[in-house]
Image (cartoon, rainbow, N blue to C red; front, top):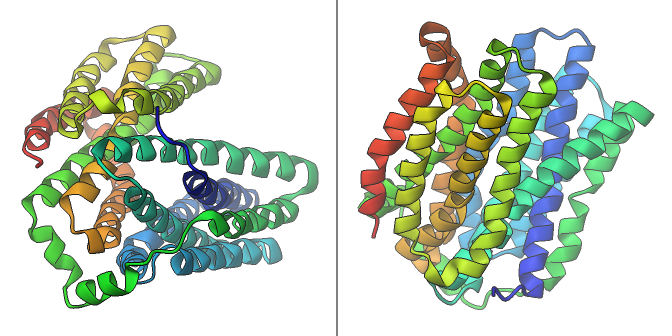
Amino acid sequence: MAQFSRPLLALILGQISLHSCMAGVRMAAPLQALKQGQAEWTVGLLMALFAAAPVLLSLPAGRLADRRGYHVPMRLGVALSLAGGTIAALSSHYLAMCLAAILTGAGSNFGLITIQRTAGRMATDATERIRVFSWLGLAPALSNVVGPVTAGLLIDQMGFRVAFAVLMLMPLAALVSARYVPAEADVPRASATAARQSSWDLLRSPALRRLLLVNWLLSASWDVHSFVVPILGHERGMSAGAIGLVLGLFATSVVAVRLLIPVLAHRLSESQVLTGAMLWVAAIFGIYPFVHSAWLMACCASLLGLALGAVQPMVMSTLHHITPHERHGEAIAFRSMALNGSSTLMPLLFGAFGAALGAASLFWMMGLAVGAGSWQARRIR
């Protein structure tokens, strides 16, 4: 069983506090804009800003983490999130909401990169890294409940300003939990080594390029599922509750597999799990369009959640294994750039292809791409 230490719990709480703030603002800000009569395209732009800031700031965040360890970049992440929440609480103007999106998105990303880098360095071997990242992988799922639910309840009872004020305070919990994360003794030496190298040199590693491709394909699979299921459900006359059940069981499976992985970590190989998950996803995507009842769609969603939920711990463990010890922050930054860029652009492509070819075709296209990409997962060493 995984050693669940106090520093690991502090990292999980730190990520929950920052991500909950961002997730709550990401739910509340577009809702406020719509109630003010803003056009749908402006709401789409507002949503894109949450992911656009991490694309631009990931590399500086990664290099700062490599130079200064955990505490300095975490304080900066808290400051950015606090500033974003404060602006949202003080002004309901659309441009203020845009600035809040940029700041909370950047703050959450600074924290994420710093936390993931520190978590990987706590582990002594591959098995322990898998366990650590499985526990840490629970934080986003919990955050996506805490932030939006808190914001929604407060908006209904007390209005947007109070909701943003409460969200603004959430990142302060990361400062409290940071007291239990020890400082790193090797940061000055590591930073001196990394300072002489360009971040882009990391991409010369074939293993890192393959891992980023595999991670992008699996992340896009997650996005296409979230995009297509509501469309297919609507086409088949399902109620909103039934569609919510399908997506809810997917999320439940993700959490379940991340609770199970720490128990089985000593039996798992990162490369084998990644390859198996990709083939599993490809098979489910091939079947999904032929399934018409809500319960069968829920079964497919549950199986898909098991596969995609197992991926993140394996990716992060492999990333720490194949990159230099003193450059883990930069490597995590490249992963963050790829995923946030994908989250910004892929929904636009999904919409275009879905309109031209039909929603079901997106599952087949993604399944073929993921199945073909499994060959790259086998070659990661």
